[in-house]
Length: 415
Image 1 (cartoon, rainbow, N blue to C red):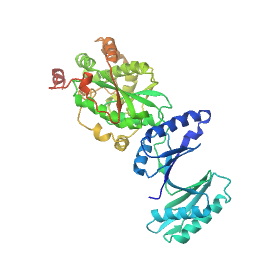
Image 2: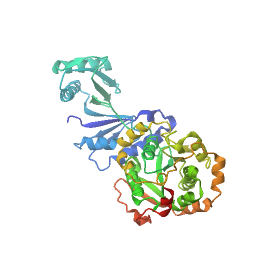
Image 3: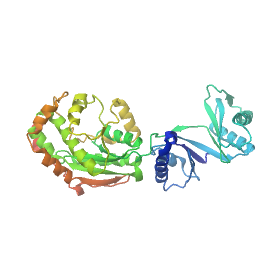
Image 4: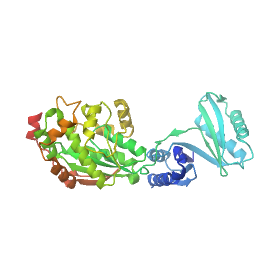
């Protein structure tokens, strides 16, 4: 392959005014972290990052770049000198390699190095004329080209490329502060975590585990999901907080009317998440809710559930179609894990007729039937916090999670 560098563009980060350096430093650190261990050299300029491949496998480098939020786009490039003959010959070599049939093309020049003697249009004409004369598969079409040959002149070097690949975009993860992601074992919440990181929010995760009411495989699935999304995180790791939820879960099944069970369960989760978020210096709670997707995600339900906290709640997927969520889940590698048939505490017992228009007053009245405050405090104080990296190998029985041998009687009664 003729390409010897990857040119990385920074997009909106260059528009951040006085805060620009904060964003750029965070991005540069992420680039160095994600490319660590590869035989590449990194050169940083004001609005560009250049990765010298040094014969490294380009697919490995691209795979790592696709994990970095804050990058707008990138291109595989050939770097040459600013000698006109060298530019012509390099451009021709590139087009000879990528063109295998008749194709319409145009040439564009960006002359950031103003010391170059030819103006942009003059260089475009000189190079495109040479390439056309020596490759008879090419035909000029400046309005509807199939391939665009780009020339960029910068600091005594010319960068030549024919593709511009869209990257993750957004802002470098961590630049916006930290949030606590409510992570179930389903499809939506890992995708919500991905989009939060894409917008610069570093995440920690909270999961409500009810073993042995739920299977240990359900909790293991959550660990495996964190391993996948940890690839996008700083240093490739995320902290997961496992909340022991069994006692609260059983109290809900014993004391709350069936139709309000999920509503009040979610209210308990929000109370716990708020307390843990404050302990962990998180600035918000994040979840995978999407309007109308299930009974607990109608606007009335959200209002009733949300009323237990004034803490900021972010819902990155709030207007997403389910098909779009599934598509993104597949792209980030979570989907096959998410659909494994292990039930979490929100799905192991689903009411036959859940309230879709629950009232705050009713929820408060039902909650008075048991001492949830003591149970919440105990759950938060007994949290299992686990740091998970992309290559973690974790045995959850070491953290006190119980393996379910049979279906507990309380679930048999309520099924």
